[in-house]
Image 1 (tube, rainbow, N blue to C red):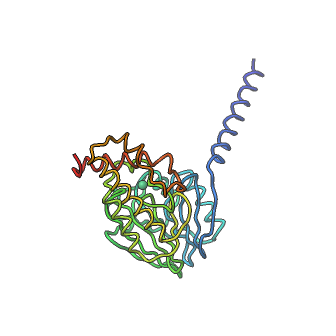
Image 2: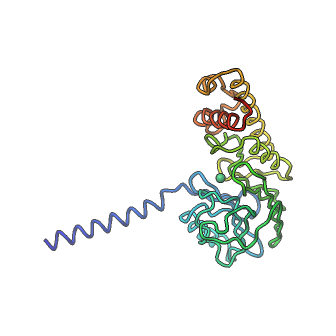
Image 3: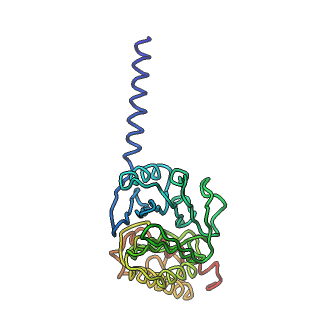
Length: 280
Ligand SMILES: [Zn+2]
């Protein structure tokens, strides 16, 4: 009996061990230098940004605790300097969890509308419309994008590489997320216009592939076209189901999530247009 119990115990241990190894290696991860000293760190469908400066590493978005542990170990491989700054692109949990793992001894920056603490981390610097700081030979320009996707979303532009890190509101050749979470579509479009007003070259999104500034304009045009078609359809008395069959947005067929998210984008536009009284 003792032997059996012992064997059972070992078997359980092995199971626990292999499970934790499996859980760790489960996430799809990669580190890519997209400009000099500017790295994009992938954790499944989410990306963080790490910039190596003479003063330390500047990290944008911890993603979650597991990812943050990995980000911390990757930063150690890239530099012997500490993490000097942790910037939150916004406070949504899928990008902003686990910050405590990266925040020790660092300046923590978030837009003023972010909650007092973000997953237990208290920002040390809050700003309204704009905040700029330098670290080593890099400058970081943090611009609030206004309400729309969340209320505390910022763009981070890095000099001299002219990289913009942009989360959720637009990504190169990728449809907006599902039904856009019930957001105000006009505000969302304004957020993209704000991005278009910024001076940058490389568009590094928190989801999807790296692109260029013109990709932001393409997403804004997609949103305006789609909103126009949904509005016209609703005004003509068509149902949302009919619109999902009729609106094809063919020129965007090669965009990421076209087939899955176009019907949901249509739903999101329809509920927004109805809720905001633009159509009865
Ligand atoms: Zn978000």
